[in-house]
Length: 337
Image 1 (cartoon, helix red, strand yellow):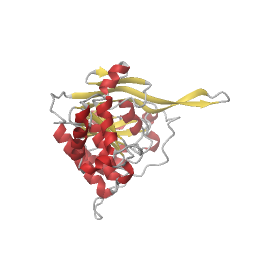
Image 2: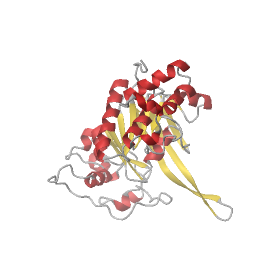
Image 3: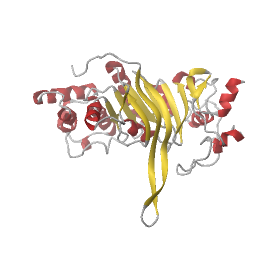
Image 4: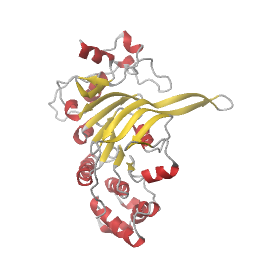
């Protein structure tokens, strides 16, 4: 078998005060004059075997955070602990070894595959680069991968342009599986697909998690997808974590959420034409990441903001129960009173 069961830990990934900044250059000499923090002091953990959702509107730093976890983008500060080892301070040789255990499924199945290589060559590369098996065993292993992700054996000889979007995403999933990873970052893997194909890919990811004990960080802007697939959810806004919550509480109408999470939920499409729900309209536009607001970054658009919100940066703290974290001064005061 290509895959085998291994002992599991409870904490697989731990992020501590992670910062990812992009320099801003200006002047005649193009010197650095500032920094845009796409991810600003983000902390969370990923439990072994769970699907952790990461949701937020476009530009909030979701994809940047996902790529930083695998060091496809270099963070500016913080720690990324994978099985207790900080991958930001490890040697290049050790990082290459860790690449086998951490993989990524990219958002765009059209640009993430080399158009000049056959599917067989694309899926053979991980076995060759990481020396996973003898040369004679590579093709049988690739054929097994194709079967696992629901593609026909004749796909081996075809090129990416000969497949539909959903089939290309299956190829991307197979490529991530080739090295037997423990942790997969899925960066909006269904956003570029038709709705009818999205459900097939989501069900495939669920089956793979069950069969091979995988752990996912699943990035999406679609709350309906997040609620269907994930066990816990992180809500981001302008580079910061607003809330960490169990999926069941996210869909409980009686449970009080962060004001931004409530606004996101209210903007999601209704599941039924007769469904009624309060519409939370946010005022103004998203502030520029280059000059974020003081205090809570959401306070200029929050209908519950108080004076203290513009002065104090709230950190995610327990609200209602130890597993529900909210970065909101108003919620924290409500829990204490």
